[in-house]
Length: 109
Image (cartoon, rainbow, N blue to C red; front, side, top):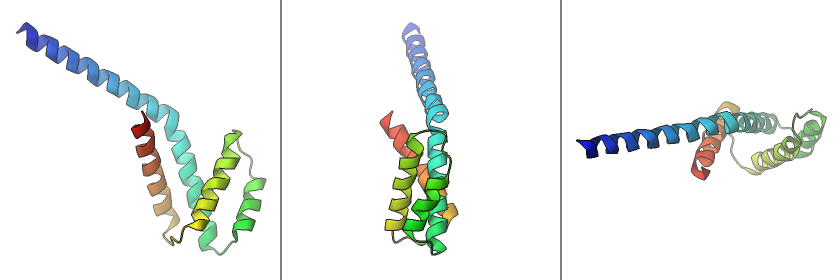
């Protein structure tokens, strides 16, 4: 009986620790994934509308970014979007980017 209680207690503690890590991931990384997904969707919209990569870059230069790393990341996401031959809808790009980003963040933890 004592061994069963120790086993259940250790499993419970491990579960709580895993939840704490997942919660930290959600709090810290969800915003970045959401922002990146929105950026990818906007780039896909511009690409499908026939806007050139040069014009899309110029448009990015006019945006105000709240963090210094956002401008370069937005440029990279836009260039990758334009390099891709994909013609899928921006909403699908946004969801795909968001899911892949969260999966990547979870794998790194």
